Amino acid sequence: MRIGLQLVEFNPAGGPATVAVHLRDVAVAAEQTGLDGLWLLDHFFQMPAVSGGAGDPMLECYTTLGYLAAVTERIQLGPLVAGVAYRHPGVLVKTATTLDVLTGGRAWLGVGAGWYEREAVGLGIPFPSLAQRFRLLEDTVRLARHMCVEPQPGPFSGAVVAAPEPLNSPQPVREGGLRLLIGGEGETKTLRLVARYADASNFDAGGSLAQWREEAHDRFRRKLRVLDEHCADAGRDPAEVLRTANISVDLASGGVGALPQIVDDLLELGIGQLNVNFRSGCDTAAVEALGTLAGKMR
Image (tube, rainbow, N blue to C red; front, side, top):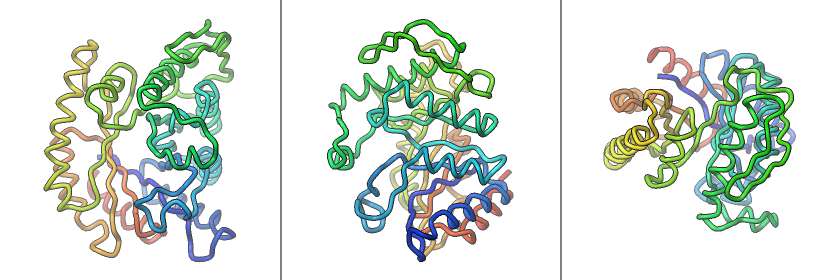
Protein backbone atom coordinates (compact mmCIF):
# COMPACT_ATOMS: atom_id res chain seq x y z
CA MET A 1 0.00 0.00 0.00
CA ARG A 2 1.36 3.41 -0.99
CA ILE A 3 0.73 6.10 1.63
CA GLY A 4 0.54 9.78 0.77
CA LEU A 5 -0.17 13.01 2.64
CA GLN A 6 -2.84 15.50 1.61
CA LEU A 7 -2.39 19.01 2.99
CA VAL A 8 -5.68 20.74 3.77
CA GLU A 9 -4.91 23.46 6.34
CA PHE A 10 -2.47 26.38 6.11
CA ASN A 11 -2.92 28.02 9.47
CA PRO A 12 0.14 27.42 11.68
CA ALA A 13 0.27 29.04 15.10
CA GLY A 14 2.66 31.75 13.95
CA GLY A 15 0.36 33.04 11.21
CA PRO A 16 1.15 33.84 7.56
CA ALA A 17 4.79 34.70 8.23
CA THR A 18 5.46 31.10 9.31
CA VAL A 19 3.48 29.24 6.62
CA ALA A 20 6.48 28.72 4.31
CA VAL A 21 8.72 27.29 7.04
CA HIS A 22 5.90 25.09 8.33
CA LEU A 23 5.21 23.70 4.83
CA ARG A 24 8.90 23.08 4.22
CA ASP A 25 9.26 21.17 7.48
CA VAL A 26 6.17 19.05 6.79
CA ALA A 27 7.26 18.29 3.20
CA VAL A 28 10.80 17.34 4.22
CA ALA A 29 9.45 15.14 7.02
CA ALA A 30 7.07 13.43 4.57
CA GLU A 31 9.93 12.65 2.21
CA GLN A 32 12.38 11.56 4.90
CA THR A 33 9.86 9.20 6.51
CA GLY A 34 9.20 7.50 3.19
CA LEU A 35 5.73 8.73 2.27
CA ASP A 36 4.94 8.36 -1.42
CA GLY A 37 3.11 11.58 -2.25
CA LEU A 38 2.19 15.12 -1.29
CA TRP A 39 -1.22 16.26 -2.50
CA LEU A 40 -2.87 19.67 -2.32
CA LEU A 41 -6.44 20.86 -2.53
CA ASP A 42 -7.19 23.09 -5.50
CA HIS A 43 -9.29 25.71 -3.73
CA PHE A 44 -9.12 29.47 -3.28
CA PHE A 45 -11.37 29.53 -0.16
CA GLN A 46 -11.01 27.02 2.65
CA MET A 47 -13.60 24.24 2.52
CA PRO A 48 -16.75 24.68 4.64
CA ALA A 49 -16.13 21.52 6.67
CA VAL A 50 -12.57 22.43 7.67
CA SER A 51 -11.78 24.51 10.73
CA GLY A 52 -13.20 28.02 10.39
CA GLY A 53 -14.55 27.54 6.89
CA ALA A 54 -14.23 29.81 3.86
CA GLY A 55 -12.47 32.65 5.69
CA ASP A 56 -9.60 30.48 6.94
CA PRO A 57 -6.24 30.52 5.09
CA MET A 58 -5.96 28.69 1.77
CA LEU A 59 -2.99 28.76 -0.60
CA GLU A 60 -3.20 28.61 -4.40
CA CYS A 61 -2.43 25.07 -5.45
CA TYR A 62 0.16 25.23 -8.22
CA THR A 63 2.22 28.03 -6.67
CA THR A 64 2.43 25.91 -3.53
CA LEU A 65 3.31 22.76 -5.48
CA GLY A 66 6.19 24.65 -7.08
CA TYR A 67 7.46 25.61 -3.63
CA LEU A 68 7.13 22.02 -2.37
CA ALA A 69 8.98 20.79 -5.45
CA ALA A 70 11.93 23.00 -4.59
CA VAL A 71 12.28 21.68 -1.03
CA THR A 72 11.92 17.97 -1.91
CA GLU A 73 13.73 15.55 -4.22
CA ARG A 74 11.82 12.25 -4.40
CA ILE A 75 8.21 12.52 -3.30
CA GLN A 76 5.37 12.62 -5.86
CA LEU A 77 3.37 15.87 -6.13
CA GLY A 78 0.00 16.89 -7.50
CA PRO A 79 -3.38 18.52 -7.00
CA LEU A 80 -6.17 16.40 -5.55
CA VAL A 81 -7.90 17.58 -7.59
CA ALA A 82 -7.66 20.60 -9.94
CA GLY A 83 -11.06 22.11 -10.71
CA VAL A 84 -11.35 22.22 -14.50
CA ALA A 85 -13.29 25.50 -14.48
CA TYR A 86 -10.48 27.42 -12.74
CA ARG A 87 -7.89 27.42 -15.55
CA HIS A 88 -8.17 27.13 -19.29
CA PRO A 89 -7.43 23.46 -20.14
CA GLY A 90 -4.43 24.36 -22.29
CA VAL A 91 -2.98 26.48 -19.48
CA LEU A 92 -3.62 23.70 -16.95
CA VAL A 93 -1.81 21.12 -19.09
CA LYS A 94 1.12 23.50 -19.63
CA THR A 95 1.27 24.24 -15.89
CA ALA A 96 1.24 20.55 -14.96
CA THR A 97 3.87 19.80 -17.60
CA THR A 98 6.11 22.55 -16.20
CA LEU A 99 5.84 21.01 -12.73
CA ASP A 100 6.71 17.60 -14.17
CA VAL A 101 9.78 18.96 -15.98
CA LEU A 102 11.06 20.88 -12.95
CA THR A 103 10.58 17.88 -10.64
CA GLY A 104 12.21 15.36 -12.94
CA GLY A 105 8.95 13.51 -13.59
CA ARG A 106 7.39 13.59 -10.12
CA ALA A 107 4.15 15.37 -11.06
CA TRP A 108 0.60 14.08 -11.29
CA LEU A 109 -2.28 15.95 -12.88
CA GLY A 110 -5.35 15.34 -10.76
CA VAL A 111 -8.55 16.81 -12.20
CA GLY A 112 -12.22 16.91 -11.36
CA ALA A 113 -15.45 18.66 -12.29
CA GLY A 114 -15.32 20.87 -9.18
CA TRP A 115 -18.09 21.74 -6.75
CA TYR A 116 -17.21 24.79 -4.61
CA GLU A 117 -19.37 27.42 -6.25
CA ARG A 118 -18.93 29.97 -3.46
CA GLU A 119 -15.22 30.49 -4.16
CA ALA A 120 -15.78 30.79 -7.90
CA VAL A 121 -18.60 33.30 -7.53
CA GLY A 122 -16.72 35.17 -4.81
CA LEU A 123 -13.68 35.68 -7.04
CA GLY A 124 -15.64 36.31 -10.24
CA ILE A 125 -14.58 33.04 -11.89
CA PRO A 126 -17.13 31.67 -14.39
CA PHE A 127 -18.69 28.52 -12.94
CA PRO A 128 -20.60 26.61 -15.63
CA SER A 129 -23.41 24.15 -14.99
CA LEU A 130 -22.51 20.66 -13.81
CA ALA A 131 -23.24 19.20 -17.25
CA GLN A 132 -20.96 21.80 -18.86
CA ARG A 133 -18.21 21.15 -16.31
CA PHE A 134 -18.27 17.46 -17.17
CA ARG A 135 -17.90 18.27 -20.85
CA LEU A 136 -14.99 20.50 -19.89
CA LEU A 137 -13.48 17.70 -17.77
CA GLU A 138 -13.52 15.26 -20.68
CA ASP A 139 -12.04 17.85 -23.02
CA THR A 140 -9.31 18.60 -20.47
CA VAL A 141 -8.15 15.00 -20.09
CA ARG A 142 -8.35 14.45 -23.84
CA LEU A 143 -6.31 17.60 -24.44
CA ALA A 144 -3.75 16.50 -21.84
CA ARG A 145 -3.25 13.25 -23.72
CA HIS A 146 -3.11 15.09 -27.03
CA MET A 147 -0.54 17.68 -25.90
CA CYS A 148 1.75 15.08 -24.36
CA VAL A 149 2.07 12.86 -27.41
CA GLU A 150 4.63 15.03 -29.20
CA PRO A 151 5.90 18.63 -28.97
CA GLN A 152 3.91 19.76 -32.03
CA PRO A 153 0.56 17.97 -32.08
CA GLY A 154 -2.16 18.89 -34.54
CA PRO A 155 -5.22 21.03 -33.73
CA PHE A 156 -7.55 19.86 -30.98
CA SER A 157 -11.32 20.16 -31.10
CA GLY A 158 -13.47 18.95 -28.23
CA ALA A 159 -17.04 19.43 -27.10
CA VAL A 160 -16.35 22.86 -25.58
CA VAL A 161 -12.59 23.40 -26.04
CA ALA A 162 -10.73 24.21 -29.24
CA ALA A 163 -6.93 24.55 -29.39
CA PRO A 164 -5.71 25.28 -32.93
CA GLU A 165 -2.00 24.99 -32.07
CA PRO A 166 -1.52 23.16 -28.75
CA LEU A 167 2.27 23.27 -28.53
CA ASN A 168 3.74 21.78 -25.37
CA SER A 169 7.51 22.09 -25.30
CA PRO A 170 9.28 20.84 -23.30
CA GLN A 171 7.31 17.64 -23.01
CA PRO A 172 6.84 15.93 -19.62
CA VAL A 173 9.92 14.12 -18.37
CA ARG A 174 7.94 11.02 -17.55
CA GLU A 175 7.73 8.63 -20.47
CA GLY A 176 4.12 8.39 -21.59
CA GLY A 177 3.29 11.96 -20.63
CA LEU A 178 1.50 13.31 -17.60
CA ARG A 179 -0.02 10.85 -15.18
CA LEU A 180 -3.73 11.63 -14.99
CA LEU A 181 -5.89 11.10 -11.93
CA ILE A 182 -9.63 11.82 -12.06
CA GLY A 183 -11.32 12.47 -8.72
CA GLY A 184 -14.95 11.69 -8.00
CA GLU A 185 -17.26 8.71 -7.70
CA GLY A 186 -20.13 9.37 -10.09
CA GLU A 187 -21.02 6.05 -11.65
CA THR A 188 -22.42 7.33 -14.95
CA LYS A 189 -19.94 10.03 -15.96
CA THR A 190 -16.87 10.25 -13.70
CA LEU A 191 -15.99 6.57 -13.52
CA ARG A 192 -16.59 6.22 -17.25
CA LEU A 193 -14.03 8.98 -17.85
CA VAL A 194 -11.60 7.24 -15.49
CA ALA A 195 -11.94 4.01 -17.45
CA ARG A 196 -11.35 5.74 -20.79
CA TYR A 197 -8.57 8.19 -19.97
CA ALA A 198 -7.07 8.09 -16.45
CA ASP A 199 -4.08 6.43 -14.84
CA ALA A 200 -5.75 6.61 -11.43
CA SER A 201 -9.09 7.17 -9.72
CA ASN A 202 -9.78 8.67 -6.30
CA PHE A 203 -12.46 7.90 -3.71
CA ASP A 204 -13.38 9.23 -0.27
CA ALA A 205 -12.93 6.74 2.59
CA GLY A 206 -14.46 9.02 5.22
CA GLY A 207 -13.17 10.41 8.48
CA SER A 208 -13.13 7.54 10.97
CA LEU A 209 -13.01 3.77 11.33
CA ALA A 210 -16.69 3.79 12.27
CA GLN A 211 -17.66 5.76 9.17
CA TRP A 212 -15.58 3.46 7.00
CA ARG A 213 -17.17 0.32 8.42
CA GLU A 214 -20.73 1.68 8.50
CA GLU A 215 -20.93 3.31 5.08
CA ALA A 216 -17.81 3.71 2.98
CA HIS A 217 -16.73 0.06 2.75
CA ASP A 218 -19.89 -1.09 0.95
CA ARG A 219 -19.91 2.05 -1.21
CA PHE A 220 -16.32 1.37 -2.30
CA ARG A 221 -17.15 -2.20 -3.27
CA ARG A 222 -20.02 -0.99 -5.47
CA LYS A 223 -18.07 1.87 -7.06
CA LEU A 224 -15.08 -0.32 -7.87
CA ARG A 225 -17.35 -2.89 -9.50
CA VAL A 226 -18.84 -0.13 -11.66
CA LEU A 227 -15.34 1.07 -12.60
CA ASP A 228 -14.41 -2.46 -13.66
CA GLU A 229 -17.53 -2.60 -15.84
CA HIS A 230 -16.65 0.73 -17.50
CA CYS A 231 -13.11 -0.55 -18.14
CA ALA A 232 -14.56 -3.65 -19.81
CA ASP A 233 -16.79 -1.47 -21.99
CA ALA A 234 -13.74 0.63 -22.98
CA GLY A 235 -11.70 -2.48 -23.79
CA ARG A 236 -9.25 -1.70 -21.02
CA ASP A 237 -7.68 -3.93 -18.37
CA PRO A 238 -8.98 -2.66 -14.98
CA ALA A 239 -5.56 -3.38 -13.50
CA GLU A 240 -4.18 -0.46 -15.52
CA VAL A 241 -6.07 2.00 -13.27
CA LEU A 242 -4.51 2.73 -9.88
CA ARG A 243 -7.31 3.03 -7.32
CA THR A 244 -6.60 5.61 -4.61
CA ALA A 245 -8.53 6.72 -1.55
CA ASN A 246 -8.54 9.69 0.79
CA ILE A 247 -9.20 9.54 4.50
CA SER A 248 -9.33 12.23 7.20
CA VAL A 249 -7.63 11.54 10.52
CA ASP A 250 -8.42 13.37 13.74
CA LEU A 251 -5.28 13.49 15.85
CA ALA A 252 -7.33 14.25 18.95
CA SER A 253 -9.19 10.92 18.79
CA GLY A 254 -6.61 8.24 18.18
CA GLY A 255 -4.50 9.65 15.39
CA VAL A 256 -3.25 7.06 12.92
CA GLY A 257 -3.98 4.14 15.22
CA ALA A 258 -7.07 2.94 13.34
CA LEU A 259 -5.51 3.13 9.90
CA PRO A 260 -4.09 -0.42 9.75
CA GLN A 261 -7.60 -1.87 10.03
CA ILE A 262 -8.83 0.34 7.20
CA VAL A 263 -5.75 -0.40 5.09
CA ASP A 264 -6.42 -4.14 5.35
CA ASP A 265 -9.92 -3.57 3.99
CA LEU A 266 -8.66 -1.27 1.23
CA LEU A 267 -6.05 -3.79 0.11
CA GLU A 268 -8.72 -6.49 -0.05
CA LEU A 269 -10.79 -4.21 -2.30
CA GLY A 270 -7.85 -3.48 -4.60
CA ILE A 271 -6.98 0.05 -3.44
CA GLY A 272 -3.29 0.71 -4.11
CA GLN A 273 -2.79 4.10 -2.48
CA LEU A 274 -4.18 5.84 0.59
CA ASN A 275 -3.83 9.60 1.04
CA VAL A 276 -4.21 10.83 4.60
CA ASN A 277 -5.12 14.33 5.74
CA PHE A 278 -5.03 15.61 9.29
CA ARG A 279 -8.10 17.80 9.66
CA SER A 280 -7.08 18.93 13.15
CA GLY A 281 -3.71 20.25 11.95
CA CYS A 282 -0.63 18.69 10.41
CA ASP A 283 2.80 18.95 12.00
CA THR A 284 6.05 17.04 11.65
CA ALA A 285 5.19 14.72 14.57
CA ALA A 286 1.97 13.63 12.83
CA VAL A 287 3.83 13.13 9.56
CA GLU A 288 6.54 11.07 11.22
CA ALA A 289 3.90 8.87 12.89
CA LEU A 290 2.24 8.34 9.53
CA GLY A 291 5.59 7.54 7.92
CA THR A 292 6.37 4.97 10.60
CA LEU A 293 3.02 3.33 10.00
CA ALA A 294 3.56 3.36 6.23
CA GLY A 295 6.90 1.62 6.69
CA LYS A 296 5.23 -1.19 8.62
CA MET A 297 2.63 -1.70 5.91
CA ARG A 298 5.07 -2.05 3.00
